[in-house]
Length: 221
Image 1 (cartoon, rainbow, N blue to C red):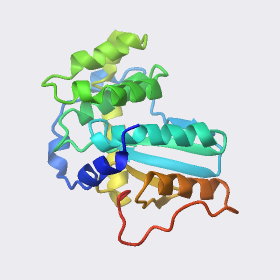
Image 2: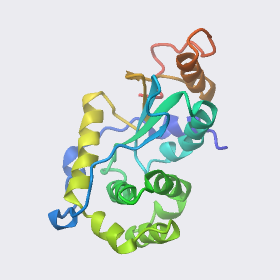
Image 3: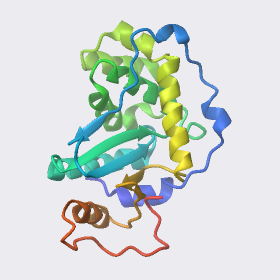
Image 4: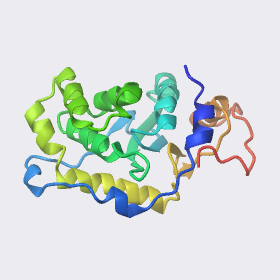
């Protein structure tokens, strides 16, 4: 697995202007049948809740996905994990389109399947001038109804959901990606082991497995 900490140290601190990300197009005519959904992995009723604010075109976010998978493999029935959108569209021009595509896939029950695939292939599509053919190819690969997928990618309802999560993140002090919240508290850590240790402590509060992270360490932002 690639070491995510080097990538995160370079890419995670990003400030942005809202006007750029609001400049894309959405359509009210694409809202038929669309439902607002939350997508939780693990145990939705678990007392330990991990939330990630992330950007599909962010290299640090892609590097962190194996870490999240480790958490879910280890504590799947003891933790609730939810992905939330935080597209940094001023530096990642495809981030919003991919977020919309993942939401459109979610309408057909394939949110995390699409989520995983776009992160796995990020290096292949991130530098492309046009992203839609790649997204449609992934939809075909996952067996989605492609016409429905293409239509709902333009849904103003889904776009509003993405924007709502973005605004929610900003209100919570998110300034870069990925940012994690554990039981409502923004996580701060300086290593893979410290990140996992904090989660282990939350799952098993009688243990002391995590490292002590100083106030000046803000890799998790």
